[in-house]
Length: 126
Image 1 (cartoon, helix red, strand yellow):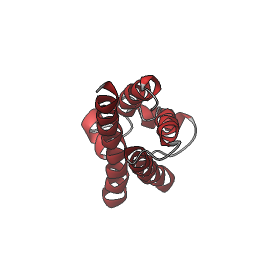
Image 2 (cartoon, one colour; image 1 turned 90 degrees about the horizontal axis):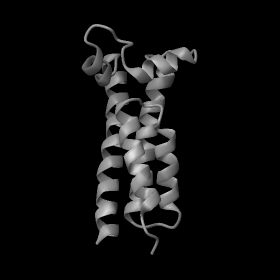
Image 3 (cartoon, rainbow, N blue to C red; image 1 turned 120 degrees about the vertical axis):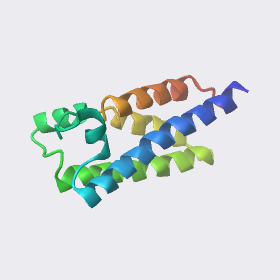
């Protein structure tokens, strides 16, 4: 019972995280800015915490590179999630690694990724 419930919770957390990354990247390509930036910032397009982190590393957060990272990270998450859903060998740790790689997407993505990692780590093996 716990294992089935864990799988459902993990699915929902990662689906929301990957789906939003994909949506945010596609939205940024279409409109020029991310949906999340306006939710957190109002008039300041660099108020999202992940944007400040990326800008501190010398990467333009509104540039094509970061928009592509959003889309690719979202697609990777949905792909890893589909492998996990069909119980493919190694998919649990692939999804765990994906969540580690999503920790940069602060605060929203970090919270979802940490919760998913906790469920993945404590999930029983068959």
